[in-house]
Length: 169
Image (cartoon, rainbow, N blue to C red; front, side, top):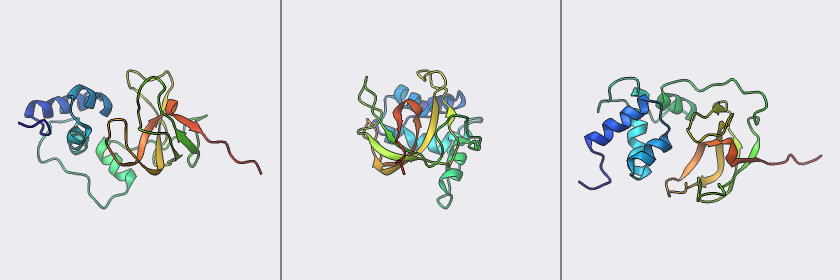
């Protein structure tokens, strides 16, 4: 079977990892498959992570906004409680590349902190202490370091954000 298709064992593994609250990047890394192969399975089944995975799971309706779509996928509401000291919604940022590896994006680019959901602490195993995940809307669509995309918005770890200075009056 070509590698672009997921086997039943692959689908079960993804469902198990979603129930364990694994990050999408972790699931992608473990699968050894391209994001374009695994991501649709995650999107289709993420909201079912608490229960058994089935082929009849409901896809995200096409007529909902970004916030509703993400809440549907995550199976929980996005927080609106903005942490003290966090970058404010509407703040201009530059998304920077990691100096130690070729990622997480193909290039540095500008964007805006999105008010869709408040920054949340990241639970990733390689997260820095107190690191937040911000929703960032990109000025132009972007591709990640693996070539997946284009993306117009994503959750970005605070270590990859550089706040732009406000122009002085």
